[in-house]
Length: 493
Image 1 (cartoon, rainbow, N blue to C red):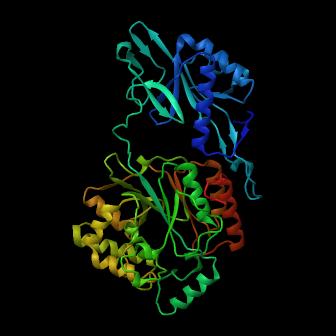
Image 2: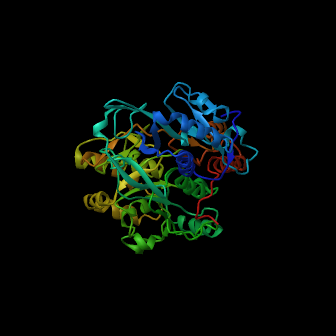
Image 3: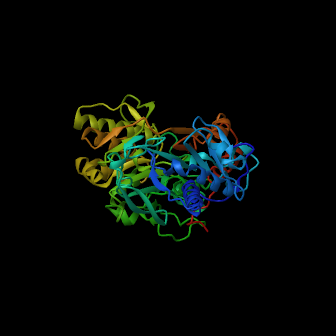
């Protein structure tokens, strides 16, 4: 989009798309046209007008381009400003994606290059199609979610739908849920502690004195934070607006930047632990083993840590099939051989305990960890899993710190149990990134992540083996997150 004028707006991708759709429809309607609202195969909106009205539509676009910086992306990828003439922008094609280029404002930290700034282009634009009516045939330049390119005119039937705050004329069935689409409510749960609190650190150290913990489980990396939760929630706002409710499972005071909002709910451990006498806990495995007990949580929910983020617009179908099967992402890391041992990390031990329990129940051996990213769950399956492994759930919930006997329910136990019982499947579709922010290589990888913005989900893990100064790590991570997610969410003060 180099050389094109830009709007400067602090809006999400979905808001930019809706704004351009409404603006384009208004342009065409003011010219006396009646655009047809379509749904592309990707689910995104498009508009269609008759090819006989092409000249009228192009003239209307010329007038609009004199007032706002509209641009077009032709088939093949060429970008052209509409200010140079809409007819030239479309060329010989009957279709183009129209959009107003945008740059999202925000303070650009010194560690972030101009290439890392958030811009919206044709990815949030609206496809405009000119349909040809030739005898008893209708020819569209592209197939859409419902139809082929070629249709019999006698098969066309129309209806009115409510979308984007107004009524639209569309083809009958265009917006009926398709066979692959997931239509149930989805929540997301983040587990979080305010590791910067001196009171939290004091109590944690005091209680830890009575426990033996595994490798790395006593490191500050387990709880320190640089405001990641704020940006994790922004990533939901910007890239997963279909999420119904965001739950924050924490016993820390609410973050100072968080205000009351109907979409965000803080839930305390005593509200969902089956046995509140085991509290307080400093064990994330214990919290994860009780998430299905959160009162009011949706049957279908995602679980994420505060260092995991959505990196671009995602849809529910990335996580659920139409029938509600969950999809999980395996990673290349193999679970170590041998049993759990107290000197190993809580993560490594829990993977081994998971493997042992699943092998005992199903006669199958799991070999891989899961990719660190948001994972989907069904509440009913988690209750069933707890009934299958009651001792393991109780033992884990009662462990105040990570122990060698924990299960990690949300890491692999749930997903392989669901897979072995026909309620889940492994997927390689999501594009994910994992960056250890304490490694020297992290600086270049963070810059690449920000410049490309091509990951569906990414994790910025705070490791316990530092290779760069902590002050530098914190500054670069914070700057990267602020540049990646510059749009404030409505629940921020």
